[in-house]
Image (cartoon, rainbow, N blue to C red; front, side, top):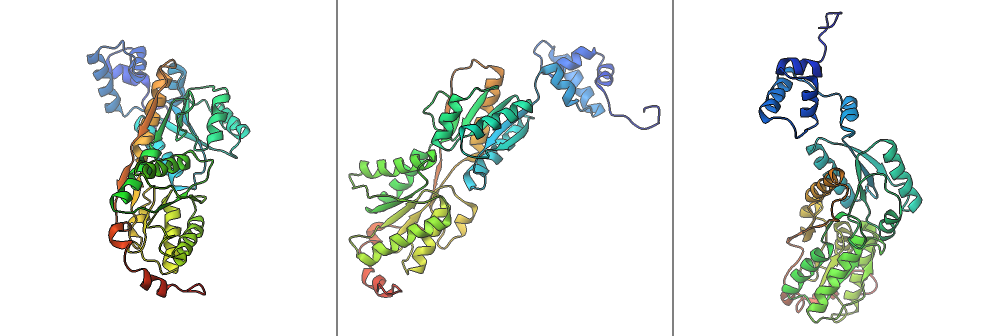
Length: 363
């Protein structure tokens, strides 16, 4: 109780008194100092639990010279992938008893990136995770001075920056090989925007799978990750059906689920059946994907693992700034649902009925 009769919160001195140790020993336990006997550490921790003591963050910062705050520079967080990565980083940081201070990029420029890093430095963060899904953003980060340890997420591994990334090439190759295993031989791709590293990887994986199978690689379509751009690509797929069986694909792999959703809508509007006439697959595993008609085959990215690996790598760098350069690739998972089917069964039949059912003046 204080002089007003109100109960005051316990202090470090109270913990020291209950544990029978010095104030300095309590401070060492709180900062996880190695030079504390295990029996003494346990006695202090019991006193902390008994009193319900909560360390003063400002005082702890003065003692440890750590703010226990991690910065995150985020970009394009209205999109499913970046938003999910940010959530994964925040969960992982909380699990390590760190706060997260997030700054959104005001533009995809070197100046905007520099301003974001300066803001985090002003907040006193111990280090930062920078989400760099664009090729030029990664290059800009490599040129900028870094006032604290920095780890990249989804920035590729082309530069001398530590980072964590999903194996986009491997994920795209897996879904393309899945379609090939079902007998599909004309697999079109709706790629993401060219400046995105994920889009480059998924395009590369699709192309590599077709080349390994000895199949020609058709020109790819391009979208902007949105359902609307997928719908526009889907109309081009439907037009290929109108031109005849030799021109049409047997399967379409869209570089994300939102674009796949647009493709599916356009094909439904044109009377093209999925998967009977053409199989459709996406990438990301949107929660809604399992409830589309038909449910969408896709590639699931483990955003929890991305967050865990990114935060873990950053904390190691904070403790050991001279640690060797590290790159981690998180493996994605193929999720097979009803939107893909056996191309050997579907490609040969039903063409005449399909064309007679197509709406519009081009019937």
